[in-house]
Amino acid sequence: MRKHITILLIFTGVLGGWVDSYGQQLPIFTQFPSDELFFNPAVAGTKRIFDVRINFRDQWVGLPDAPITEGISLNYRLGNQMGLGAYLYQDVTGPTQRNDYTVCYAYKVKFPDLTMSMGIAGTMMEYAVVGSDVTIHQQNDPAIDLAVTSHAWAPEASAGILLYNDRFQLGLSVDNMVTNSENLYKKYTSDSSANQSGIVQLVPHFYGYLSYSFSGNPDYVWQSTLFAALATGTPMYLDYSLRVHFHEKFYVGASYSFGSALALDLGYTLRHDIEICYSYDIVTSALSHYTSGSQEITLIFSTDSFKRTNSHGGDNDEQFTKKKFGYMF
Image (tube, rainbow, N blue to C red):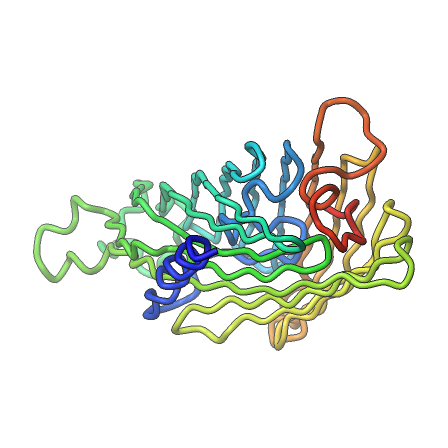
């Protein structure tokens, strides 16, 4: 027990040590409950043995050059105590593009009715500016070469903790821990004043979420989730979602991003191992005058084997002494 507490204190210290940041740079997904690995490496190995999730988000439909984000995550449970994961995503906003290539490792400590997972991840991040997509007011402005697409690479790291059973989840994580900078248009930075013009400073992002599932009847399960993201320089992002799962087959839900959007959420499960999720955001901020909203779709394949199964397996189905909702993803 003392060993387990020491490990937890070390990870808590790592997470708590990164406290200065300058602005929100990483994408947020409405369907956070359907793919937490993008935000917390401790999720690796907490699903079924094989788990693949594909996400596509079209944000602020109708607004020119609005963000479009697409990604895929892979999750593998290695034995009873370890998990491996990987994900990549592309986030495009106007002439700028960010590509993240990440691998994750997690170690799990099991208690009678609770598991603690601790994860770390390494990332290679590519940032690009497409010159031909930039519009300038003065065609001869030397500030940027419209004929050039500039790329910059930087290593990054993240860490997280996840406490969970089949009814409860509490996660804390931090991304962009290395706080690197990326230098674009290097050939134009020969003097000290120009050296600052092409630098993108990467800053830490903090995430926290709490989820609880409850029901008096396992055929109708209520899943309640609170998610928060913080980066200094922008307001805290806070989102609450509530889903109702019916007969292990489909769910309906809604979420509210405080001060920005209300989302409607639907999901349907095929053959117990394939799930399709769709959400539509109704913008409630001043942006509602310029966009019809945002939409997102997630495809999930999650299984303990490649043979057809009639129940969800993995941690949720075999370890918890007070298990109630072992079938849930």
